Length: 199
Image (cartoon, rainbow, N blue to C red; front, side, top):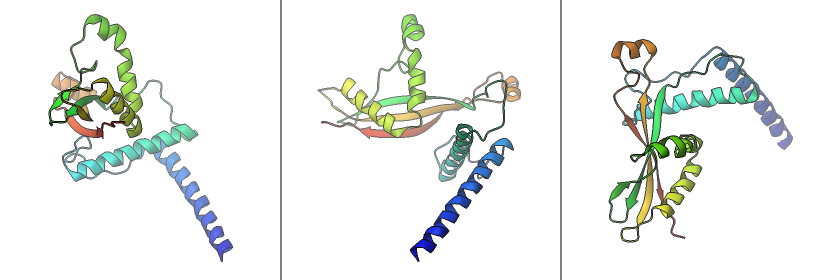
């Protein structure tokens, strides 16, 4: 009985693997994407309703499938130039104090910087944010560092909140028509709140 179950399980796993590989190869090279729910009305860049959140996860799944195809060498699509980003984004980091007060931390991308800092010191910040973008664990470690670095004895920092702010990049035709390459609206998405560890 067990051997029959293992045979069926093995057959299922092999078939699933074959279908998954075919889907990754076909979807990437034919540029197929998973359908979103009324994307014109419920933009995946918003976070104020459930359907927009679902559309965001669908878009994230498309990116994940594309990334898997690139990693395992199933992506046969080549391009001479890198693709244009769909949106600009940056993280906003806020300290939440014991009395409920919230303060914007004096990090390089959140304060006025002089020429020296902006051009010779802060160049690593964007790369660092990109490195922690997809890892909540890395964001948690960063938040604990910020808890220690900006701790206030008079009004202790109890948590660090990271929010993602983004602006959609317009298509070349739309940018030419409007005279600007970014959407005016800045979309704010809560990225995570991390409690400070006392030990």
